[in-house]
Image (cartoon, rainbow, N blue to C red):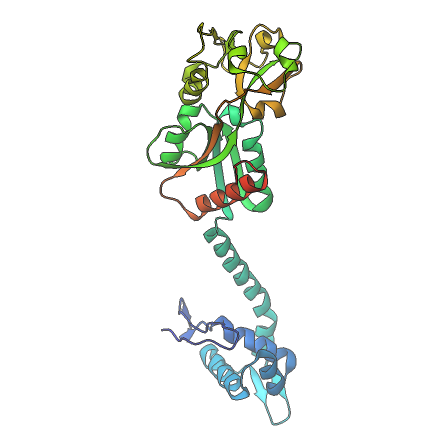
Length: 324
C-alpha cells in the first residue's frame, strides 16, 4: 500500500506500510510533521501558512492521520483547536521519534557517501615518512564517522591484499604489479641521495649521477620492492666503471651506520629529506627521473573506496604532489 505526492518543499508523502498494529497503518512522517506544527499553532490557518499548504489540504491530511491511527487527535470548532489526550501524547512522543529517524537517514546518506565505516590501509615503509600519514590524517579529520586503521606491509604484498579484500586500500612506491586492483598516481617525488652531513658531496645543492656512483650505493634488498630497486639501480646502468652496490643485511636498517660514517650514499626519494635521522642529509640527483607513489584500490569500488580516492586527489592537489 503506497501513496505518492510532494508538498511545495519537495517532501515526499510516499508511505510504505511496514507494520500493522490493531489493524491500523503506520502513518507517514510528513503527516506527523504537519501535525506537530498544528499542535504548536492550534490554528489551521496559521499552521497551513507556516507549512506552505492550503488549509483544506492540511485539514484533509489531519483527518487521514486520525483515520490511520484510529483515534481523534484534535477537537475542532470555528474558533480553536484543542488536542485530545491522544493528540497530546503524540505531540510529546513524536519529536524524539522523528529525530531518531532523521539520524537514521543521515547515517544512511553518510554510508552512501563513503563517510562511514571501517577503513583498513596498508602502506609500504618507504611511504610512511610523509605521504601515508598525511593521507590518513586527512581521512580521519574530514570524516568523523570513519574508523581508520593502517599497517606497514611489505610492498609486494599490498596489491594482492587489496584485491582479495584483506585491506581496503594501499599506498605503494612505484607502480606495483597485481591483478584485481586499480592504481592512481598520488605523488611524484624527485630522486636524490641520502648521505652523511660531513660527506664530500653534501656541500653540493645537486649531485651528478656519476659523482654519486663513485661511492658504494646503498640499496634495499630487491625482494622488499623490486620495482623501485630496479628503477634506482637503472640510474647507474651506463656509468663506467660499474658502481658498487651495497645491500644492508636488514631491510630498512634504522641505524644506517654505513651512511652516517660516510662509507655509502643511498639513492632515495625526496621524502627522505623530511624525516632525516641525525647526521644525515638529502640532495637531489641532477637529471634523475621522478619516483612515483600510488594509491591502490580494488577494481570494483564501493562508496568508501570512492571517498578515499576523492580525499587523496584533493590532498595531492593541495600539497602540490603532482605537477599541474
